[in-house]
Length: 83
View 1: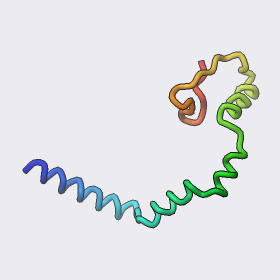
View 2: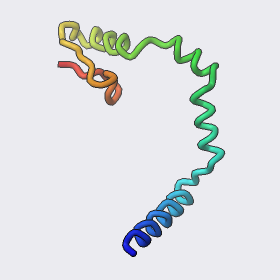
View 3: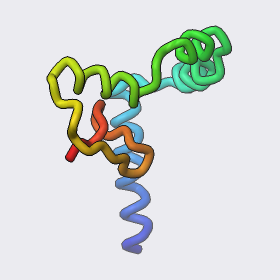
View 4: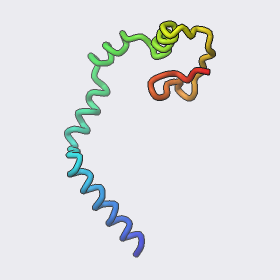
């Protein structure tokens, strides 16, 4: 009985969130297509790597001697973690 109540509450919550945020399946498909767009991939491939950008920022700040390391993929919150 408890499981049925939890499932009903979850379904109602999902339905309310769908109407509040206006999520449509067409929007989700559009986002998926954007991820595989060849033109956008070509543009992003021309941009410098995140590590290069962070090194340039450190040079601007005058902090070239700090130790840099990566955690996971190395990109957390917009900048590399710096010791």
